[in-house]
Image (cartoon, rainbow, N blue to C red; front, side, top):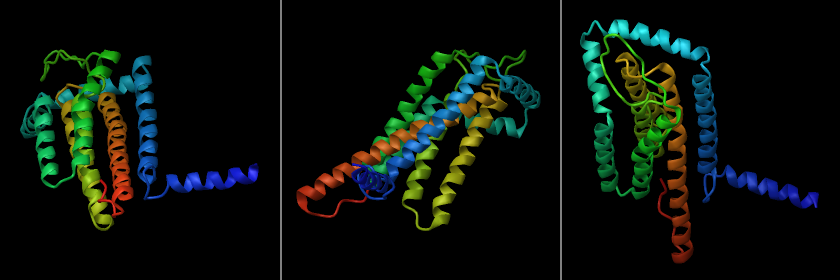
Length: 250
C-alpha cells in the first residue's frame, strides 16, 4: 500500500508545480500568496483590536505627518490630487479604462479578473470596515473630514488590486527578467504613493494601509488564480474537442 502512495504523492506534487495543466503552478503560487496575505492581515487586525504597540506607533506617525501636512506646499497638493484620483469614482474610471484596453487586446479572462479584483475588492473592503469599525485619525484642524471607518484603507486596497493586476499582466507578457520585475516595482511605487497620501492627509493610520495592502494581495491572488484556472480549463476542453493547441492563457 505504501508503495502505491509514494508515486501518487509524487505525481500530485509534480502536477502542483507544473507550469502546464489546469491546476498547476499558477494555482499553487496563488494559494501560497493568499495564505501569506491572510496571515499578515490577521496579525495586523488582531493587533489593532487588542490595542497592541502598533496602535501607539499609528498615533505617533499620524501626528508627525499631520504636523508637516498642515504647512501645505507642493507635496500636500500633489498628494491631494493622488488621493482624489484614487477615490471610488476615480478607481472605477481607471478600472473601466483598463477593461476597455484589455478588451481591445482580446484578453477576456483578464477582464474577469479585473472586475472581480477592483469593484469586488471595494465591496469586500466596505464589509471589513463595518466589521472592525475603527475610527479615523482625529485632529483639531483636520485636512480631510470623513465619516466612514478607517480599517482597512479602501484607497490602498483598490490601488493594490488595480496596479497589482496590471503588474501581473505586464510580467506575464514580458520577455526576460527585467521586463517581469519592473512592472512590480512600478506597481509597488504607485501603491506606496496612494497609501502615503492617505496617511499624510490624515485619513488613515499606518496599520490601516498595511492591512489594506495585505488584503489587496490576498484578494488579487484569488481573482487572478481563479481566472487563470477557468481559462486553462476552457483551453483544455477546446483542445480535447477540436484536437487543436489551446490558446495562450492569461
